[in-house]
Length: 117
Image 1 (cartoon, rainbow, N blue to C red):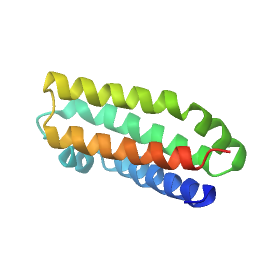
Image 2: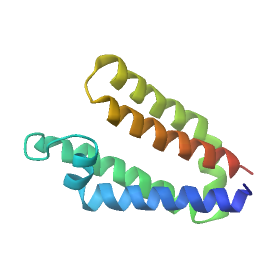
Image 3: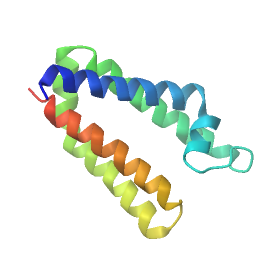
């Protein structure tokens, strides 16, 4: 995959996740196995992650931002992997959620590395 295609894929993933999590947190929570009526406070961190994804999308919309973001990608991927590992070890969330999170962050990492300058 060439760098430009990888950058566009990463931009698309972050736009979709960002918009969905920021504007539709209850739907996003259901996809991750949370009950939005029972776990009302979880909407805040879901929206927070949406904002993070939209920030990444904005950075990926130009070459300079892409350079900065992809240089930091190993740190971002490490933090995401740590969150997934802790969720898996503690059993705080269903395995399906851990797999979904690992898949999403794995794809983002692969596209990010492919888009590096």
